[in-house]
Image 1: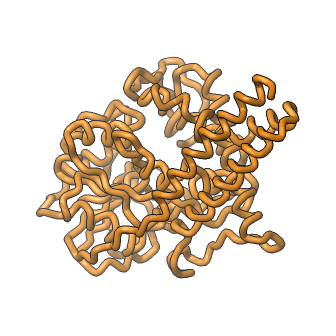
Image 2: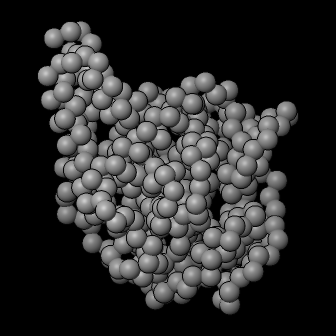
Image 3: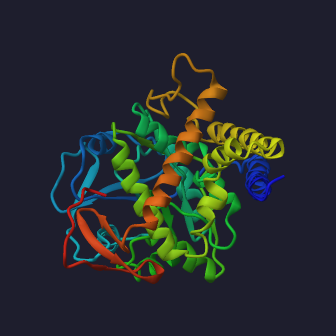
Length: 383
């Protein structure tokens, strides 16, 4: 066996073992969702809502307990009856955190559980209950795994495959996190301790990562909501998806530089190993890559089961099955697309300067996820 083949085989065994451990943990019995009717304050920060986000805001929330639904934005968007608007135009560098702090200062707490959910998430009563329950039971923070739905284009499939069917799904990240838990800020439940920590993060771009890190350092619990945060997708392009996840990789490098190299090593090894296997011509390496493909397909199958809406209404009728593909082939193609997107984003982040364009503004990144305005603005789209 050549040195390159031996190196590739070791890589395949390492990555396959990593996925096998995650699969084993995800096969454990899921924690039952405890019914709760605690009072909830649901905050939806936004700047310039898209038609899809306005549709999400109009979706009725069938939560059994008291719920106040508040949109925080500079101007009043068209809202359905029962949804309140609070004017908010923060000067904080992280405008999302600025919106939240303004909302929390303006609205009475009254012992309510505070939920923060992005406008691109379709909120259901089950999601509200799933986020509020752990916080009411004593968790410092609860988070839901973002689950794209209704993909149509190739870029949509890659994004959905990455977040639903690869090892970079937040469900897989959560069970494999060593130390601070992986957290996605799209849907959060905040305790009073989490709110206190959030007040210091108005100059951080990855406030969710930093919040989890600070809570873990104080021995506080971060819980994963069993209900996925459904994100109905508008048709997108590959360049848009690549830019979003390149920014994600840059933020990861700023916040957790020790984890940054694990992206190619453990999360996106399949494509490089397939190429190496073809070039090396080693039967041992081919067997190792085959084993990696098998265990990652099984992992993707389990993640698909965990993130598929339990009823058509929960997913709002936007399934992801495609005619002409059997389920196993569909899952394998989607997770391979997702890995390709993440690998491309990682490689792109290697050559990018330490600055990101987010929500129409350009910032320079510093250690720990802190950011400062870049005076020479770059043209960029909405984050």
